[in-house]
Length: 293
Ligand code: ASP
Image (cartoon, rainbow, N blue to C red; front, top):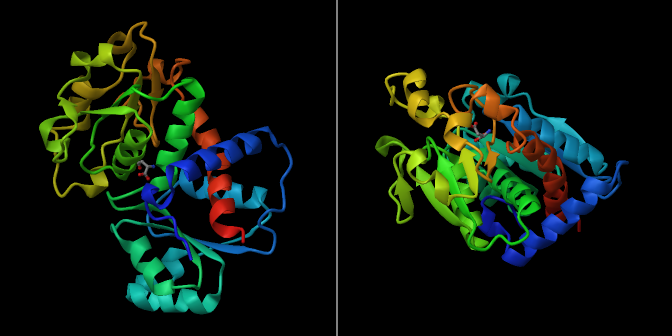
C-alpha cells in the first residue's frame, strides 16, 4: 500500500501527472464519483483552517465519505499510545487517514503500523513535512512560468521550524528551481543552499518569494525580541518589492503586517488565495492517485 508522507513518495513523472489531472479538475464544475464508496477519516491533532477544509472539499468533490475524528473527545487525549491508536484505526476500516500532528514522524509511524489497512496522507507533521502544501505551491508557480528551470525562489522567514519550507526545498529543486534561504541566523537550518540574511540584498535576483509565518508554537522560547521587531526586517512590503516582476506566495495563515504588508496582500502579484484555490484540485488529484484502485 502506498502512503503519501513526503514529496519523495511521488516520482517526477507522477508529480507531472498529478498536475495535469489537477488542471482538469480546475475546469470541472460538478462533483464526480471517482472515490465513491471510499471512506476517509481526517485526524487533526494540531489546528488547521485551510488544509483540513481543503481536504474535506476535495473528498466531497470526488464523492468520498468523510469522517472527522474529534481529537478533544478521542482517547488520545486520555493517554492512549500512538500504536494503540493505529491498531484501533485498523479495526475501524477506513480506506484512508489524513493526519496532522505536532510531532514529526507520526504519519510515518501510523502508516507502518496500519500495514495494508488504510492509506496515510500526511497533512503536516511537526517541522518535518507538508507534502500537499509543496505540491500546491509548485503547481501555483507552474501556472505563472512556462519554464521552471533556473527560476529562483527566495524562502523567507522561520525556515528552521517550517515543514512547508522543508517540503518545498526538496520538491522545487527536483524541478530545476534554485532555492535561496532568507532568514535571521537563528531561523536558518544547517544547509548547503545559498543563504542571505536580508531579502533586500537578493531581491533583484529572484522570481518567486515564499514568505513563511513565524512558527511561535514550535519555539521553546522567544527567538526574536518581538514579532513587530522581526517585521521591521522581514515583512514583505511594497517598498521592498517595488515594481519587480515577481510572484509572492505564503502557505497561510498570514500574520498581516508581520509576514506581508496589507498593501502587498492585495497586490496582484500575491498569489495567496490562488494557492488556496489550487490546494483543492491538487489534493483531489493526489487523493485520486493514492486511493483509486
Ligand atoms: N499552514 C502551514 C502549516 O500547517 C503553515 C503555517 O502554519 O505557518 O505548516
